[in-house]
Length: 423
Image 1: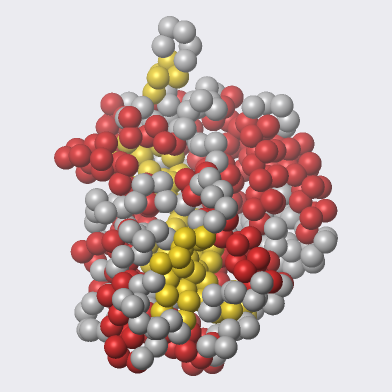
Image 2 (image 1 turned 180 degrees about the vertical axis):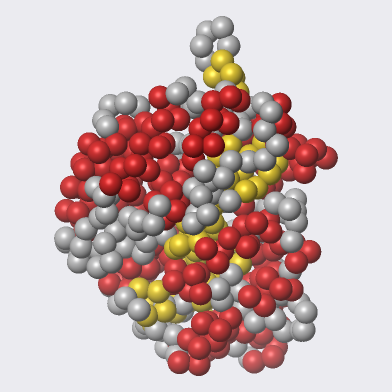
């Protein structure tokens, strides 16, 4: 599936703050009735253009598309709302939703749309758009994590299957790791990254697999000082203690063929296919998270929501339901088509069934199957700040500056201080 857009979400954390909004209209000259704001570029959103035009012809409702850069998105829409220029429809990263809900920005879906969402989407992903028991929108792009491994490196070390437990992963990774005469790693048994997502998301994935949520149910504090959480970080630290990886090794180097294993989301497929070309299926494997039979994955999602002050709320919800419903039997919805073009995953059950040519290959199918056992990234106010704090302490533990218990105790203290401001 060579349509995948490179480094889709993790790289978005690195987007430069442009400080402006680029607006363009996909309604082919019709008068504007609804405005839809999203972070996708015109090229990425191209599949929506004929759909919006068709909807205008069918209903007389016209939609203008407004692109807002990812790095500026949350602040831009909050500022626009203060100025009375908010769009009718938002496309939102799920961890932004608590702040928007807390500020009264989002409209709750009407009952008929709410029933349609619950019937049409994988329930675990509906959790990603749920806050305090209320569903706030229609899920769109979703990502989860799996173990991605280099089949050839494993085979060369005498392994004919990926690990199924963390102990197996450590043993296999140690056998694969190689160093040059200067002591530098030339082939790494495992890799992390330097972004928040490539540090915190694997940690959350292992926490969920260990049966632990990062936060207490009421978000009044964390579970980071639990024995299970400390054990998870100790498992990660062991990779560094044994010299299997170090901070110079990045998941982005996997296409070079010098990394054996990593936790990664499906959107990285484009880089892998570009690197390995015809050898892709012989080199790249996808397997469950190696944490035993009860393994879980982390998922994060985007969703469409409607502004609570929009004068066009009913029309906005009608349009969004239409946009995410197939208009012909056996076809994907308009949004599903766009996501397939991007190489992204969807939790829309009808779109999954209709898109098996896109989603059924050996790389993508395991990710889709794992959606049923993927737990949503916590929807907590100030999630980005909180994850940044946790990243800092995880990295200090990896570097040997703090023990796992010391790192997580300090992280818990700082994060709990933030949580107590809101919960």
